[in-house]
Length: 163
Image (cartoon, rainbow, N blue to C red):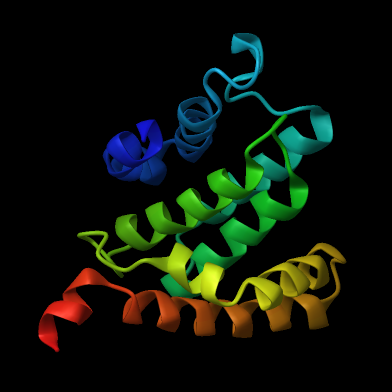
C-alpha cells in the first residue's frame, strides 16, 4: 500500500535523480521487513554499480523507445537483485515509473504487472535469459516485455470501460 500511494510522486525524481527514486521505492516496499539501515541501500559494491548503470541509462537522453528503456531498467534491477529483499517489486515499480515519466502512460492507467502475472512462466524464463548477459537473452526479454506491455494495456481499467 505504501508503494502504491507514493510511487507516482517519484516520477519527476526519476528524471533528475534516479538513484534516489529507486532507493525510495525500496524504502517504501521493504519498510518493516528489513532493518532500517538496509532500506534503499544496495547490498554491496557490485549492486551499487548495477544501480548506477540503470541510473546512467535513465539519464542518458537515449532515443530508444520508452518501452525498451522501461524493460531494460526492470530486467537490470530484477536480475541484479541489488537490495536485501523485494527486488522484483522494486523492478516492476521502476518499470511503471519509467513508463509514466517518459509519457507512455502519463496517468499510470496501464497495468504492466498484470501482463507479467498473466505471462508468469515467460517472465521468469526471459529474466533468466536476460540475466545470463548474452545478446540473445536481452533480445528475448525485449520481445517478451512487448507482449507483457500489451497484456498490461488490455488489463487497464479504461479498457473495460470502453467495452
